[in-house]
Length: 379
Image (cartoon, rainbow, N blue to C red; front, side, top):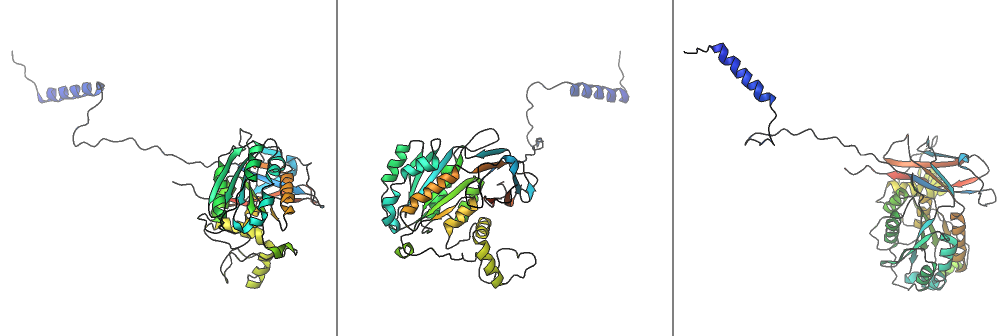
């Protein structure tokens, strides 16, 4: 008997076979066919979220210049680019201190070295205190780490007492860059941990020679790493020991005939008005300008600008005994400072962030760092 298949039956059989083949899962991995492009799954989108915690030391004094210790967190108001922030941590001189001491050992300050060698006990007892840790870096035409972080007071005093005179070079900014790098690895106050206050103490002239690092770059990173810089300014000029220090206005940070800051509301911007303005605002304006323009240089007042930019203080020492007095004052301030911590919110991420701290009492004077700079994240 012959079976006659019509064209319709042939088509139906082909469809049924294809359906059955499609419904069966392949056994094992599929081998790609030569010349056939394999379709890849679309790439997953990744988003970079920048999360920072800003710690700012705040020094509060009354009308007579005495430190004020009776304020609570509710007495402070802190803004970031004009936006009020929530204080997440509040402390009065309680967090342990991580201190890096940068000591100039060039021949330029050779006459002051005997007095500097005696300061080890002040560093451990007055500045860091019993809960703190200290590291020591010396610099002249080279930068040398003499002591890594230690809580051993005897070791600190021993290193300081054995400081050696060196050549006349002064790589101040390179030493500061190393100090920032060392401090950035110390435990810091965070949302979940009680960390250390990061402090750099510079005992040196305000003179740099031969550094590869730029001061603006150093200060920008110091601000981001929540490092406070204090300075004991040295001078070996005998004439300065015989007279009262005279104030000199810092140089304009931009070339003559140009203005690095916007004009004040309601004023005409001229060389004479800007001269008065820089004379009044000087250090704060220079500190902000230098952090925003990291590649540019200033030729004087480097240590004063560094301390202003980070909320610290500069102590000029015209006589040997003033070095000890300066360290006593720095220690007293550190252990009487308020530390305010917040996570910035409600403000643009990149660019310069201006910090403003106020207290409820109008009769008090507040000192805090002016701000910090956030560069766009690297891709």
